Image (tube, rainbow, N blue to C red; front, side):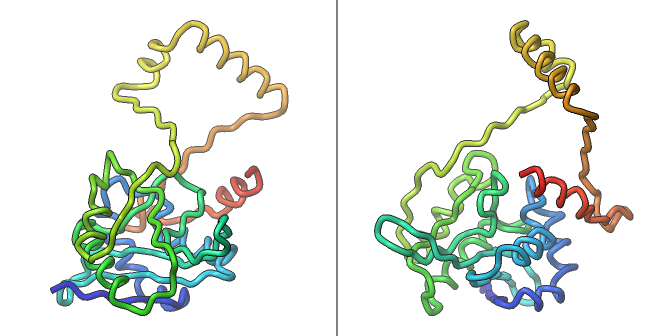
Length: 223
């Protein structure tokens, strides 16, 4: 039977860093926003007024997955509402459980939430990638815990799928699109030096674990 360990202190997560990285490496279509690094940066700048609820799901001594959550106050037409949700806050497009077994992780986490003292008014797991990774797991996990989910679109994300290569994609665009993009690029060059930086570290296992917070700070500055 799955057991859940709840962590409410960001400082105590240091003891789970290796476990988190291991589970993240097994997560389907994992992103930076599901990493412990993101959660620590997010908490440093935006943790005030929020409560941390990181749920680690175990089967015996084996960790099955991690579900990072926060409780935050949001103003609505009905007044202030305590919302239990993912720690993304609109910075990225998608979020979800960390680990290779999202189904059991969600089911165990939802039962834990259902059976522990309630510190929230609304459980709202936003930014779920319904079509590519979730496939109804979040809804089924809630129902299995005795909750009553009501799904609806939260936001739309634009994604380009390059099945082949950039040249093939570019060649399939219309002449009008290509002219517009070239014109925009020329206008951008007039503003100064343009540099494209693509950073996707392979992780400590391959000797590539530098977090490059300088790039993160630059992105925050632009935002």
